[in-house]
Image (cartoon, chains in turn blue, green):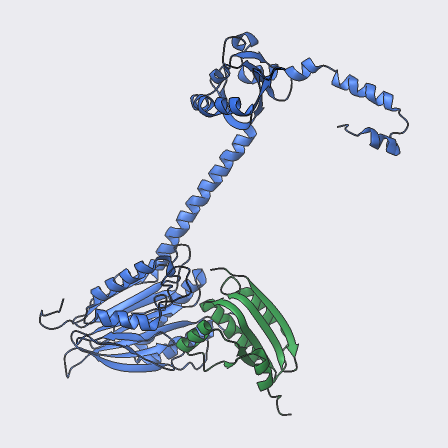
Length: 422
Length: 119
């Protein structure tokens, strides 16, 4: 297209032709016809009286709509060309705004063509006033917005697809999370066991895990742990840790040996540049033949200590000092402790999503070990389901302050007679 | 939680010092791993991670510190942490890493404590 200015002309590129020639050439091209420009402009033109009655319309718009000039001029109002929704919008917003401001610009409306088809347009109107400032008529331009509408529809569709994908991912994550946990905990004769898993984010799989399973001679193995990181990599590590613990316990159920074997496996799998670790408590429950209840030996690999809520209403941590995280140190130290679980006692294992939770969302303060101990002291004496219910309630009060997944596992030895305190 | 992390590496006679400022989590961990890979550590030297500017550190952040330790050990060098934030210190005590890293109040103190290997 020729659109060079006279200045560029004098720059010498077309110096062989005079400015007059150029002018003539332009005139010939443009035909100098305002009438033709009006009628065949690349947009629709419409002039109406103040009441909206159509006074003038160009050929472009007539062609778009499939009307003859006589069908519209003097017969129809601008709003007659609109869809029902568009007409409503015109009456309630467009026309009042136009009267108030003298101009309305770039409004998306739909026109109804003679054959009933719809044409999306962008409408701009101005009010033409007389020399005395009185409004005389309304001039309207309409731009074909079919391309734009198609683009918007495409955007909407893409967004809908993205929403569907997001929902699908959430379901996938939830499924993956469930596969990392036992569907239901095994029922242990003489024990009451419950667990609760709190998912902090539906978008990313967390890495907490637990299980309870039978070993030989009436003994039971249990574990609860937390792998570093989130997402698919954490899920893979969780899987490896879970199955290794189960297998190692069958091979040799001594809790410190089970964790030492897990340490070896993880250390071989992940090392060097991209080390990964987990913290875990492994417990071995043995029915106590001398007295009622169970003997429980706990081994800790860098995991927050278990809590024991006793039948007499006291509660304390069961510290396992010196235990080290599992998977990154070739010779991780594993600390063990052994306690007797008497009837009425409740053992609580937890991951640090609970103690590291912000008590007030966004605040720096974290719940902490002391607060959890106080909480358990008010709970004791209690049972397994009341304990997990109470922790669940506690986590609910933190809301979004719980940044990380949290798992709790409660093991309770019921009293032989039904004289539980309420 | 996503906070930006900036790394500043300088070299002293004792060895490299990496100053970490910002959040150390699974979004920023790859930057530190990349920096570790490009580090020139000689046997007997000491790699210092200055954590004074760390505002956030999650479990993935901890793996980065372990990766740094692995890197130092692989080069027959040692590692020291300077200005360990309270939260990182607490995680260290829970997971038993306080026995694994030597720590100093400042990077300067870490450098002063370093002794060249006997020749």
